[in-house]
Length: 212
Ligand code: ADP
Ligand code: TYD
Image (cartoon, rainbow, N blue to C red):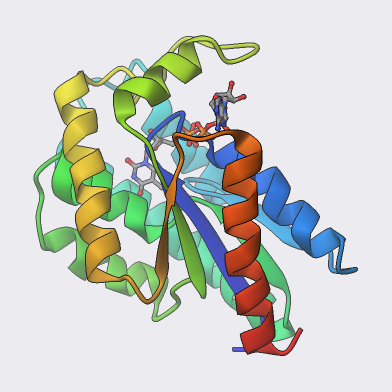
């Protein structure tokens, strides 16, 4: 595949949106306009599925239904957007990807290995060149969200109890350890600028490897 695929991961409020703007800037400074997308979402069908997933009124959703809807949204995003864009040689920056399902559904919901299996069909062999895991205690993330400018009411996932968010966080740490060649663990309990510098170092190395 010719392009570059970058994902950002972490608990809610870990600083993904903030650092995504910096990753975008990194490429724009090099004269490259990256394609921005997010999960769940990024295509018309996937955005409809996102509404179902995040709707606070859908409290009866079963864990397996939830996992499969995330995987469906992902399958559509990969088929319609990510694969064609990578084949054209684009740079894609994605707010969350398959590691979110491993952390939230396999660990958070306790669904285990089934999640990776189902998602292997959704991602169809496409994994990011690099994934930045913003490592932040979920309690600090929650605190940051509550003071975020224009803070809205919590969505269905954000409403979950703290023990769910700690299972997710531990899931992320396990996934990062098992995939250390792809996932860069970034200490997110620092200033925005320090985190950005760390991410830029990794991006410079990636660009050298890719000959950009
Ligand atoms: P996410 O996209 O992971 O949910 P955001 O980027 O929206 O997280 O960050 C959540 C809140 O925390 C925002 O108000 C943001 O301005 C703030 N924030 C982001 N990074 C930091 C940081 N390193 N230190 C302190 N606050 C931060
Ligand atoms: P979003 O508002 O995009 O997240 P953020 O907190 O980063 O702004 O909401 C996406 C929610 O869906 C978030 O709580 C994480 C969750 N999620 C999963 O449970 N599984 C997945 O596979 C993905 C992509 C997200």
